[in-house]
Length: 142
View 1 (cartoon, rainbow, N blue to C red):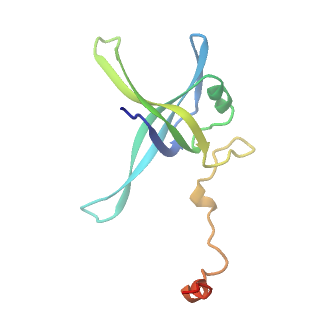
View 2: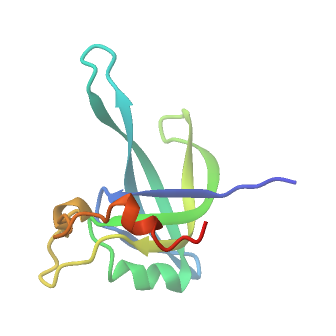
View 3: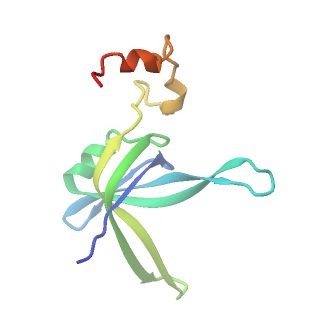
């Protein structure tokens, strides 16, 4: 048995491009997914982006083309697909892309079409502190 599933969340790196592929349509866009690593020289955490091409086929891609914009944060579930071809200069080329089955929005599109604020930009701490452990355990019967 083989399993080919991938789940990533990140930000769109470019405006989605809707194109015709034979009798169906395909939406293509890029997603940057940050990986946090500690820099051994500075002992600081740093983001290192990974870039993925994403394809969404058919009516789902058509609908998403009207919603997705560069900079939006999304979660993508799908499968990996490897392809290879011969470039115009004669070199062999290959890539791995994500064929999306599901795209979830993690940031809303602004009414004016501008780039949405990151989720962390909208975060505010709760007004009250969390209850103490004694309050949480006082109703436990043992």
